Every structure is written in structure tokens, then in C-alpha cells.
Image 1: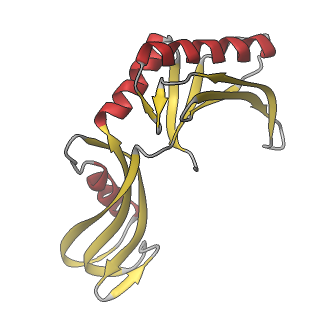
Image 2 (image 1 turned 90 degrees about the horizontal axis):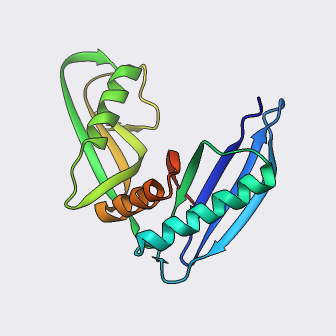
Image 3 (image 1 turned 90 degrees about the vertical axis):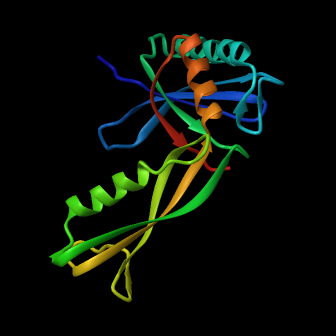
Length: 185
């Protein structure tokens, strides 16, 4: 059975969809492309009209499935626009004793960063910038011995309503989302 990969990007005034498959050499082969104009439904990367956006999503999926002659089970969603912004965050860990930094510790610090709360906003992606160990900064601290570590992150956030309206649009269109990604502007 052929497994297709589909992605949808919501722009300021249009929705774009693409579908394809991964070749044996790990390259991607584009098999279908569709675009749907939906003026006044999405503004600056934010879904304002959930019903019209859902109709646009359904139209995109129908066009892609028509070109593929197969159904699409799940899609990856690209989000961008002025609804996104970044916030710096630092997570501190006092290790009490001299400890060799492990992958597990880095994952715990990253998870703690993702658990950070922002007023009416959600973290879409967290990008580790550097780790401070003593007076030194490290990009990859695994294997370094220390008794204190700071993780510096750049969190990409959006208003909670942006993510909620996006999810509601896909739910109304009966489209399963595999994952949401930040797309370049």
C-alpha cells in the first residue's frame, strides 16, 4: 500500500496543500498540489472564520485526493504569520553534587521549559539556544561535569485562541492532524 504524506499551510488569504510520497532514497516526490483562496477567513496567520476555513480545508483535501486517486488519512499543518512571536526563557537546575550532564537531564530541562505557562498563550516550539555551566556556555552540555546548569530557550508562542481556532477548523472539516509545524515566512 502506498503511503502518502500531505501538508497544508494556512496563509493570510489562502490555504495551500501538497501531497507526495517518500522514495526509497529518502527524497520526496510531489504528486499533488492545490490552492484555495479564502479571503477574510484567515488574517495574519489567524483563523477568524472557522466555518469558511473548514470549507477551504475540505476543498483542498478533495482536490489533493482527486489528483492522487487515494484518500488522505492525516496532514501536517504549517502555521506562520504575525500571530507568532518569540519569548526567551531560562530554566535553572541546582544539582547539589558534581554531576555529569546526561541526555535525560537535558530532556527534563526541556520538558520543564515546555511546561512554562504564558498568559493566554501556548508554546508551539522551543528552540534550545545554549546551556550555561559555571561561567561557560555550551551548545551541547552532555558529558560535562557541573553542579549547576541553566538552559536558555527561545520559545515560539501564539495566543491560545489561534491554536484552538486552527484545531476547530480541522475538526469541523473532519481532517486528522499529524502535527503542527512553524513554517518560514
